[in-house]
Length: 501
Ligand code: NAD
Image (cartoon, rainbow, N blue to C red; front, side, top):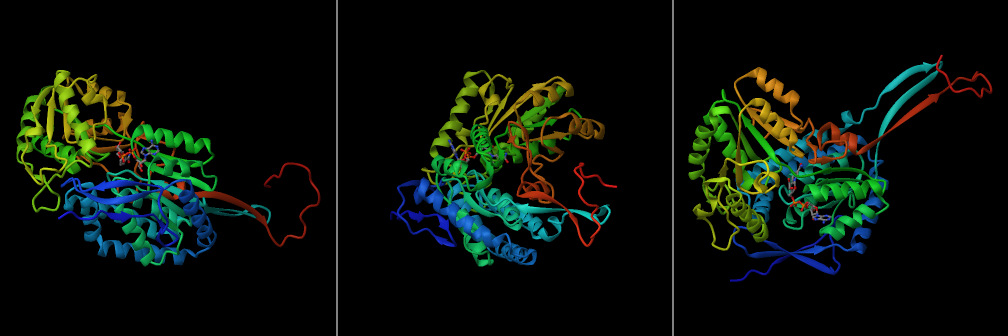
C-alpha cells in the first residue's frame, strides 16, 4: 500500500498557512526510503508575510510582563516534557536517528528551556545610585525585535530550542526556518508553544531552502539571525547578515579530535570513541571523527575500537535494540560512502569496512555501517573534510606536542576530548587547545544549558555562543539611562562635558 505524503506547511500567526506554495520539497523516511511528506518552500511573499506577522506580534509581546513570559516558558517546559515521546517519534521518522537518541536530543533541549524559565532574573540590569549629585545610572536589556533562527537537519528539535526559548523570553518575535530535510519537528514545537499560551505571531515557522534564508537575511525588519549548519553556509549567512546591519551568530561545521595519551584507560577510550564516533550515525557536530593515538597506543587502541564496532546493531531506529540508524538522505549516504573509497585510494588502512555491516531494516533505507580507518595522514580528504557520517579516522602521532599541533592546525574548533589519567596533562591540554568545548575523559562535551555552546575558528562566526548566558546577551540590547530627579538646583547653563563630582 502506498501512503500519500502528508503536506507540511508554514506556521504563521498561530496556525498552519493556508496559501498555495510556488515550490515544494520531498521529505523521506531514511529507514525505508519512502516519500512521507511534501514541504512548502517559502518565496519572497511568504517571508514577508511571516516577518510582518512577527513584527506586529513583537509590538505587544515586548510589553508582556516578565511574569507572563516566564509562565509561558514554564507551561511550554511541562508540555515538552509530557510529549517528548511523540516528538522523538517525529524526529526518528524524518531524521533516522534511533528513538532513544531522539529522546536524548529532547532531554538536552529541555535544559535550554529550563534556563530561559529564569528570565526574570536573567534580565536584571544594574543600578548605581548617586553617580553624581542626585544622579542615578541604570542599565536595562531590551529585545532586538524580529529575529530569524535557521537550523540544520541533524537536531531538528534541539537546535531550534537552543535559541527560541531565550529569544522569546527576552521579548523578541521569531521566524524559525528549519531544515527542509526534517521539517515536521518544528511544526510540532510551534503547536506546543501555542498550547503553552504564547500569543499568535510571536513564533512563526517558515519552511524552505536558500530562498527563504536569503529572504530573512535581506529583510530590513529582521534584526538578528541565529544560524547553525555547515561552515560554508555559516560563513555566507554571517557575511550577508552583518553586511545588512543585523546581529548574527552562525555556528558551522566540525572535525572533532579525541586525543588518547599513553597512560589512558584504553578500554574506556575505545568505548568513548565508538559511542561518540557512531552515535546518530556520526551526524552530530560534536561527533568524534578523528582519534589521535599518541605514542605506542595505536595498535591496541585500534584493536579495541574495531572489536567493539563489530557488535553494533544498525537498523531502523524504531526497532528495539538498534543503536545506529540510517543516513539522512540517499545523496548524503552516497557522499559518505564515497569517502570510504577515497580513504582506500589515498592509502589509509581500512581497519573496519562499514559497507559490509549487517542491517536490521528495509533494503531501501539509506544504510552505511560504521567504518574505521587507521594510519590516516592529515592531507587525506577523510581527514581534511567534514564527512558527517559513520567514518572514524585514527591518526598516529609520536607525542603530546604533536597531538596539540595537529588539533590546533585544523581549521575547525568545535569540540575536542582528551583521554588520560594525568591531571597535569589534561590541564595543560585545556589551556593550550584552540577549540571552544573541551572534554576531559568526556567524549561529547556539550555544555549544560546554563553554560553556552560554541566552537572557535571555522566552527563559529560571530561573538556569542548559543543558549545559556550568551543567548540572553545575543537576544537583547543594553540601554544605559542616566537620570536626575527632584533637584531644582541643577546648576544653570554649563557647556562643559558632564562630569561626575
Ligand atoms: P546546511 O548548512 O546544509 O543547512 C543548514 C541550514 O541552512 C538549513 O536550514 C538549510 O536549509 C540552509 N541552507 C542550506 N544551503 C543554503 C544556502 N546555499 N544558502 C542559504 N541557506 C542554506 O547544514 P545541514 O546539512 O542541515 O547540517 C549539518 C551541518 O551542520 C554540519 O556541517 C554540522 O557540523 C553542522 N552543525 C553544526 C552545529 C554547531 O553547533 N556548530 C550543530 C549542528 C550541526
